[in-house]
Image 1 (cartoon, rainbow, N blue to C red):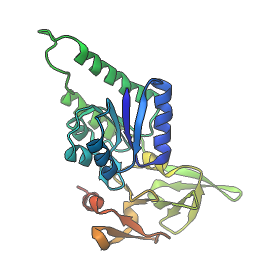
Image 2: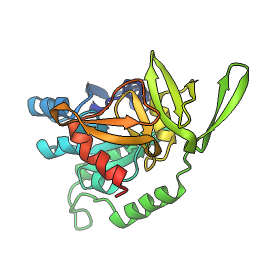
Image 3: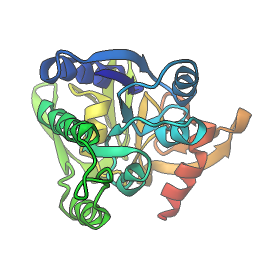
Image 4: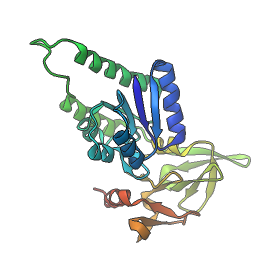
Length: 265
């Protein structure tokens, strides 16, 4: 089985490749791509893989943009921290929708579905078997609704600080940011704490309705946004309160998503 992996977070990509080696040792990852542009270019220049594993939110857009620019005939397993794109995913070659944090069991479930689909196509046509299986959208919607109502987002962190443990509620967080390979939590009151956890993990723990992943370095809370400022090349500069040490810049393809998120739509 030949697999194309599209994932812009290096640590997540490494975990996925490790899980692939464990659950499907005969599989071969043809390429690991990190952007919409790279995925489009690769698919235009190479034969289609048997299966694609794709994150949805990439640095220069969404993986759906890839499927709109290139005709893709192979099935796709989507791996994401967001549950709101499930219906769209199943309308665009999706056979499984796996929520982060990814586990070996989740990925194996996706591969099992791929195996069942491939077996179906290999079977000779019969009156009872004349068309490929399609997603049950009613069941999918129920799943999405259950996810929306049952997701247990992290409510607080207990942070070691000097000789004490400091509780910080999610509602007190202004933003998380990576500096010098460490993740720092900054509160709305301006307190700053180092965390022993990756930004990817934090993104999977917080409510996506209240926190927005700006880029690879910053994850910020809705309550910390002071104002937006147009930036060059169609990008957007986000001013946070308290201010982040780094410029928080949103790429052009994601500006509309940011505005929609801030508008609560």
